Image (cartoon, rainbow, N blue to C red):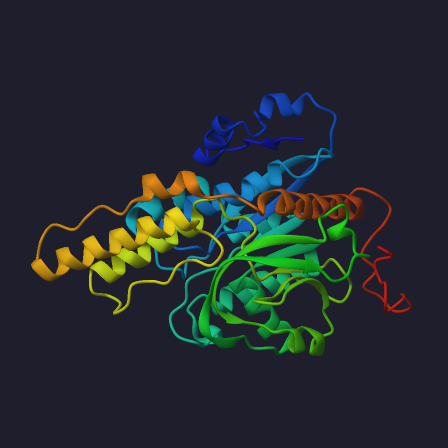
Length: 355
């Protein structure tokens, strides 16, 4: 069923304009369909705050026809914010205290930008752990994206992320390595996922933690895994929620940093993303940019209008299917007689009875 526009959050209108199913509260009240309440802990920086809302709201809205979805965005006050983002949060976001009081069926935790290598030294670390601890005891399933995955692996399983010699930046092929799990039901056995990260939790660490690895890439490692029970925590290391142009926006930001002298080198091509014509356009732009910088001339415009139409999206359908399967499992646990049996006496190899 569609997502319910239960607040005035502008994301709802943006999604409606895209053709995504969005219900008014009045129409939702007339339908005899069960509700699922999903929290979105949005830790992304200001420039990506609203886009991240839309990306995850869209995946939830398109995911499954079995329920009405109410999404409750909130963030952590310890994250630095500018005036515009703070006004948006104050107007449309809920507090963690309010979310905790009302309760959730599921929770999504986004990534975040950090300063320095140690997650435990970030100003949001303590409040994030408080959310994770609460969710582990009170939420049917928590989906962790990128840095949130790294935080949970460090805090709950003692596995610290490892710096990589080069950034994982691009769209990479992945394979399903455990076809039994219902999260990957009716999903292509091979599919693409975008990645954008300098750090990784690697296969030996997932194995040491006793986690269930479902999807892996030869090039960039594990993308999808779960906690040992199969559902309490779901881990993404990639970014299947990304829009087609998300990596283009990141590449543009890096080129502008180069132009401003903030970084010494022009950024490398995003892997498996630009076609030959796109790469030629970027090479031409760099030549004009370097000439302008050397002469002190006005800088050329980044050729985003020429590059964007040449990009392909090879990941969204699979992302939608996985999130749909996730929502289906949450619904099955929260709206039937089945419950997550965190208790003695269950089958340790299949405690949820999922497969």
